[in-house]
Amino acid sequence: MKAHHRKRKSQYAFEASGSGKSTAHGGQVLVDALCRRFGLWERLARLPGLDPRKRKGSGYDPEALCAQLVFTLTSGGVSLADAERLGADAVLLEAVGLEKAADQTTLAEWLRAQTPESIRGLCALNAWFVREALRQAAPARVRQGGELEVFFDDTEIEVHGKKIEGARVNYNGELALSWQTLWAGPFLLDQELGSFGEVAECQKELVEEHRGLWDGQKAYFYADSGSSEGALLEHTGAAGFPRWSVSYNKWTGPLERLAGELPEGAWGGPVERNGVEEAHAWVLHTPSGMAAAQAFAACRWKREGEMFWRYGFVACEKDPARTPRAVFERHRLKGACEQRFSEVLGDLDLHHPPCLSLTANRAFYAIATLAYNILTALKVLDLGDDQQGWRSRTLIRHLLTIPATVVSHANRRRLKLCVPAGRMRWWRLFLDRFVPRRKRGEGTDEDYWPVQLE
View (cartoon, rainbow, N blue to C red):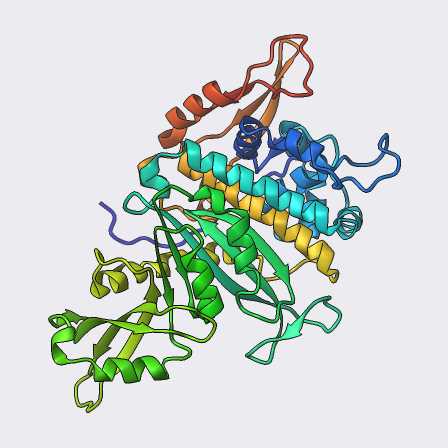
């Protein structure tokens, strides 16, 4: 067997074909099929206020523009310019039922023409989609220990240029927009983009709007220290969550004093974690803005050579069945929720708002949220257990970005998808179940081309 392997020149001769019969994004038929299963295109068409045209008989329908942006984001595109370039891929457009792609000027004008009501309509449609996906998904894929994890957090979308509407100087001295998000399981349930003065300014409204999702259900709510002021803690405790925990590291002076006054017997036995012994206890304290005492799980530890105790605190519900140690162990799972920001911001490149107008950016982020949830639903509902750890970029790279070619035979056109041999069975099952076959002579308004694998 040859042991020395080098980089050589290719032995092939290369030829580029401009026949217009191929696409590199054949896997987008999966996105279209999923959206049709949920009736998303029809629901987008019926959303009030989404179509600003005075003459509805010309131009682009709103569901077509939304679909163009969704297909752009789920195929690796990140900007309105990428959405315009989608129009050069005639095979892809026909495969997903788009007659023509709008240019970036048309897209930007449509985004700027949206209203707060139409944007909230997009958010409400996204929330409906999330609830339906959660209902259809296997519980083990969307719940942790049988509980639906609900997570609120805010992230800063840094922008460049003083003309970005709504941008403000953040705590790092950078211009930024605030993106406040509410998650349910692996899905981004709702969001608000703006120039909010408080880190958790939208938390109460978002939680109240979607309270019916967890009322009477097993659920667990996480939040970071931005949600730890007294009024927000009181609201969280009354929001219907059976169990919840919020990081508390801003106003810890009174808690550290109370923890230091606890008798030694109040602390549980020491537990080693990362080479350091920790002990846990309950502390009761009434923060400003609360009418009654709040329960806090306290943790104390000393590193080698240190004289004084260090403390950490987590606010939580008053549940005698839970130990303070169990509260900390469960609250540390919040880190997995925070990592989802990396996926939605990094894989869809939402670090960069596409427009100067705040209204346009809010509409774009509402559609991008829907695109992210479509990718997540495709993974949770249709992929196997081995693929549940895939990020959005992995789905795009290995499932949605596959070659496809149009072939004609016996006066019929077929889209041949070049599927890896290891995934052939999955593709056949998916297409047989979710992609209807069109008979000869039938119209194509609501159906696909016949699809063939090779």
